[in-house]
Image 1 (cartoon, helix red, strand yellow):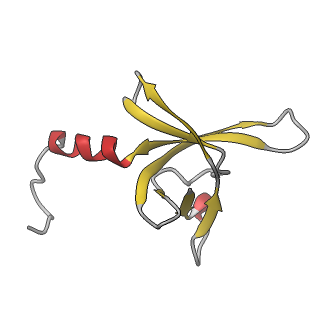
Image 2 (cartoon, helix red, strand yellow):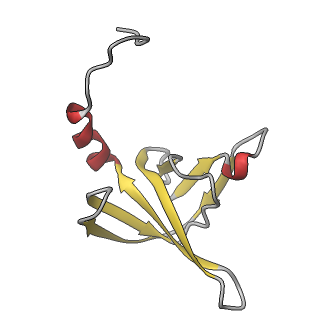
Length: 102
């Protein structure tokens, strides 16, 4: 799986990071639902970036990264909401009132 975005406000071409899906888990705190955990090294500012599978399909949205700085190398676990969970939430959004194309 891959995350592509502009961490740390980097200008220019987006940064792509690769990783392995570790597991799916269910969260009872926001965002509620099925989340993906991976070893993608997402940097600050990557939240909201798309998560792709090897075929290029968007399978989720990057949420957060937790690091363990106590080791000799930086290790981390990234979390992302699955595309299915995101699509389930859209009907609950309020209708736009202005500035939206129909």
